[in-house]
Image (cartoon, rainbow, N blue to C red; front, side, top):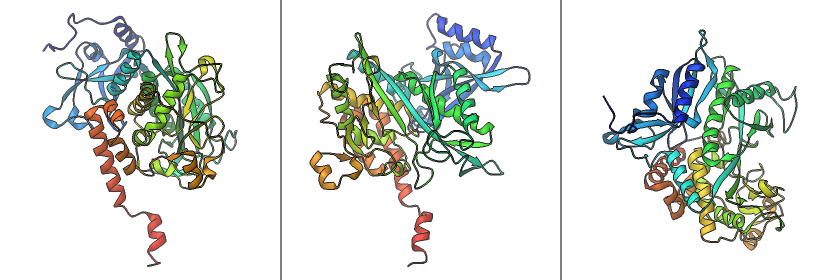
Length: 455
């Protein structure tokens, strides 16, 4: 049966044909059509490789009502349309006959052929279209952190760190250095350009940095990165987690994000005559980030566990301010100029939906440019040491203390509501409000230890 929404000539673009050629050359027998739900969980539909051409020309149907945050059962038919630029062979999967599997990231369209407005990738694309209309392209460089834990005899995850190394430690304390190397080699095989990797502060904690790229590619890369890290760790009988705070009383995992805008003249954030090498555009964008931080926190820090990381004393920012010298502020300006001029937003964590997280940050910054927002003066003192009176004197607000408060901020922020769109903002808030409500009714081991025999 012919799909009425297939390409008019039924043909392929040069990029799509190149993918089909590579599928044949690499002996790919299965193709994973990948996308994410509203919570950022990677989903995929596997099809035989010979269905790739149909995927390009017609799309592959799936039941959208079964995916978190998509559509109701009476409007469930949706299609996956592969983006040929995201094709990659999966290095860890090969058959005895030399066959391979590959993945390709998809956009989601409705049965009428229009993009599904609730698709997280489409949300980011819409925000990037707004940036383009303003004359900008957006580059983001993420720094995702993760933990490697041992598994038990049944293969279940524990919270026992794989090593007892610390920040920048070398082997033998950093037992996972070989695992990190394998993760890096795998990522490079999939087209990543790795800039650095090292052991992080906490036992079992690691960071691998890949080169900045345009925001859509970066979001795609974050989703791929998490999948690769988990797959390689599993091969070593380890469990990799991007949970923000898996163990109490030690540092949690963040995903600091370096942002810059480019226009027809180059880096729109660069001004070598400025003390911090930043342009007026950069300061306005930063002002938007600070103004909307309480609201986008629900998206960039989307779990109840996220707020166990956002507490004083563990290098995680909770104060809405900027600085060039300390890491207690939400935004840090590194010592960089020219094409490298940028600033770093330090609050996001790696559990967030990368598409919605990046979209929220960008929308906040673009609003700052539109409204000529003023980020104020940098705070060069350690804000963790400020008392309430001094923070009030400096006009420094704090991020929401929990997921429930963050969702409330998101629901009242018109800029972010518009950026996410009515569908996504509503579904996201519903899911996260339910998550927080369920959390509030739980009784923790800490409560049992504290109160069971005392009262």
